[in-house]
Image (cartoon, rainbow, N blue to C red; front, side, top):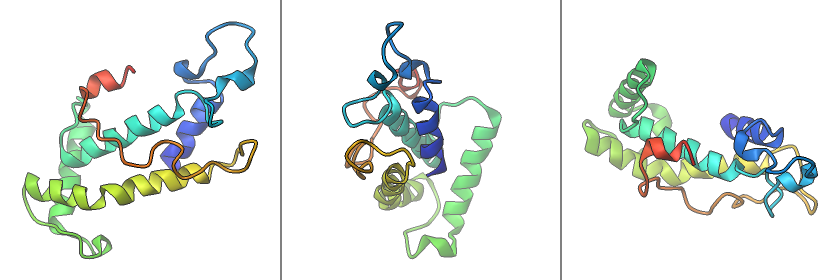
Length: 151
């Protein structure tokens, strides 16, 4: 949720290259998609979600050492189980981590979508709806992870 808010601010202020106007002199209000969200915001939210998914599943191609350690820590936590998992399937091995992710993926995307509705900036006809960036979680299965960062 905080990640979604920060992505919104980043794109709304035009800091992200993809959010910047193509032509000098364009009005700032042309920097938004038809739904009123900044250009590139929904794509960034979806990429971020896929990055988290890959970290949880241990399939991230990120080469930073701390990401590898984080992936190991996440796997250990999932395998050990916690009271917060509310009866979700937990066990050992990659299959169990994949099963656990499949069970919570919709809830995780729901949290991201909920955060979009909490964005302080309002659009012309009210607040942003919960499905502005997609009804279903993005899979990320159709492209290479490192390629997705440059789209």
